[in-house]
Length: 249
Image (cartoon, rainbow, N blue to C red):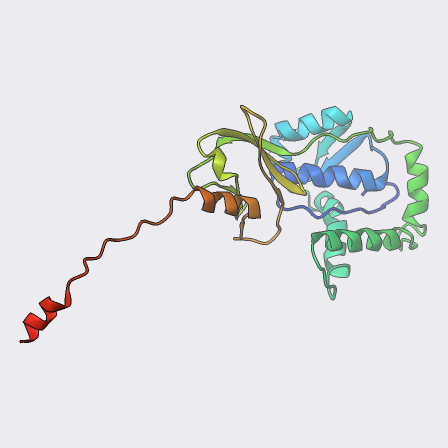
């Protein structure tokens, strides 16, 4: 929320991990249409490092955008309330009574809601935030053609049980790549992994908001079944009927 216009924007993210928070900040900046000189935050873990300094990831994000940062001082409820007031307003005025088909529908409804809210006359300002935002744009910096990449990445080895744990969900990997190293990339829409030695795609899944789920790609399930040895038949002795006759006699 820019300080002058009080125009609002919001983005639904998966968690409070640093990468997800940065993706949310980037999405809000896109919706506001320009870059401010300074990003003001409370001391949110993942964004704030220690002693009023930013985390390494947040500092890199701001450095790529060429914007400054400022953290609210501790024990300053007024400043913290100013930062979080918009979030509280959305929680009490947007979410109640609504039904969402999925996370994309949630985001669409949230964007439409902010469009209406920003076009209303603000009770304190006595003006519409959208009109003040146009004035504010004259003092802001244009958005870059591409925002910083906020995807989470790491390298791991495909385990014998070829699944990847993200948050609380398990996503399948290609079982033919068991034992090989893959680079995993997690953004706000997809989870993908690529074999380091050959570039083969190990997986590409849509990231799921539900918790404690197992997501298995159909081709991974088929490859796993094809790789299993056929069950061996147990040899069973077939006795002649004369032996049973001898026992009865």
